Length: 215
Image (cartoon, rainbow, N blue to C red; front, side, top):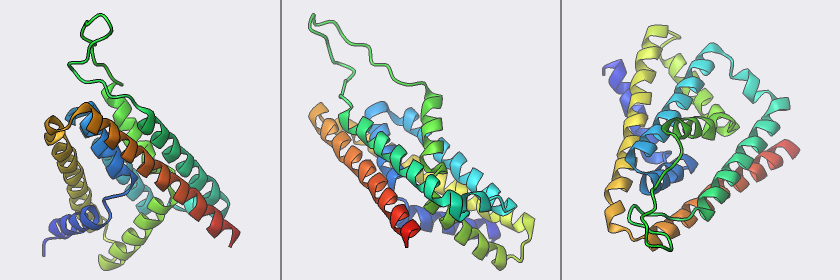
C-alpha cells in the first residue's frame, strides 16, 4: 500500500475512534455559535498543534514534556485551561443575527478575530501531556515500521494529519449545516452541554494527573 495512504488510513482511524475529546466539543460548539469559518480557524489551530507535536516528537524534544518533573504541571495547566474554556462556553449567551435590543434596533453580531480561534485550537492540546504521550506511542511505532526513514515518515504523517484536518472540517460543516434547524434556546442548551463536557474533561485530566503523580 502507498505510504501516504497508509497515513490517511491512520488519520481516519484517529478521527473515528479518538476524535471525540474536548477538541470535538469545542469544534462543534464553535461552528454552531460562531459559524463555519470560525470553526475552520479552530480546526486549523488543532492541525497546527498536531503538526507541532509530530515534528517535536520526531526531533526528540518530547522529553521536555514527558519529563516526570514537568509532567504534573503540564497536566494541571491543561486541565485548568479546559475548565476555563468550559466555563466560558457554559455561560455564553446566544445572540442571533436577527436579535434586537430594547428599542427594537438590530444587534450587530460580532465575535473574536479569526486568528483567535486558530490560537484556541492550537493551545487547547499543547499542554496536555496525554496528547503528547499518545503521539509518542504512535511515532515510535511508525518509526520502527519504516526503520527511521525520514522521507517515509514525512509522507506517512502528511497523510495522517491531512486526514485528521479534513475530518475536523467535516465535523464543523456538519454542525454548521444543522444550525438552521436549531432555535436560540436549543443552541443555548448545546452551549451548556459543550461547556459541561469541556469542564468534565478538564477535571478528569487534573484528577488523573494527580493520581498518577501521587502513585
